[in-house]
Image (cartoon, rainbow, N blue to C red; front, side, top):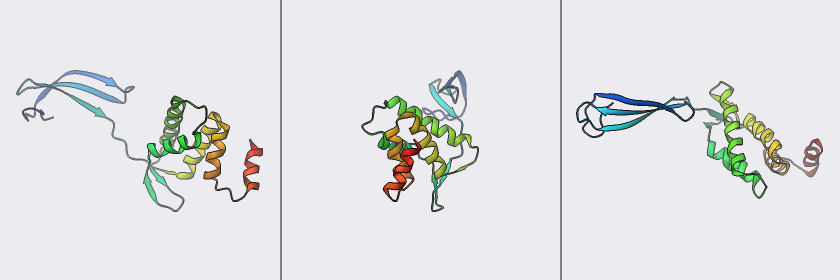
Length: 147
């Protein structure tokens, strides 16, 4: 590691501690050239999760996009921001638990619908009406009856 101050490439680790629930390591280092201390962070490099869209295109998993979709469905409903953030984290975790580098967009949609169903029925129906692409009121009615 090169010192950000003098560029010397030798240092010693003064302190190491786990951060972010053990998923990263924070290290305090001291340059052996100029004695300046600086901090580095080590993270596990994960291979990106790709989402396979309905038309076959692949794009990287986008957590903010998932958050926007859920917030749109939950708009003006009595669901806390903490519950939304927790739901997004749980859905993202489920996507990564599949163990492959690719996941179908339809799987993510099913995960979202299952989570919304536990949070708020109206949000679930809002999301399902867009996700399932209901063609008429009859299809929408069937979904409501299943609830």
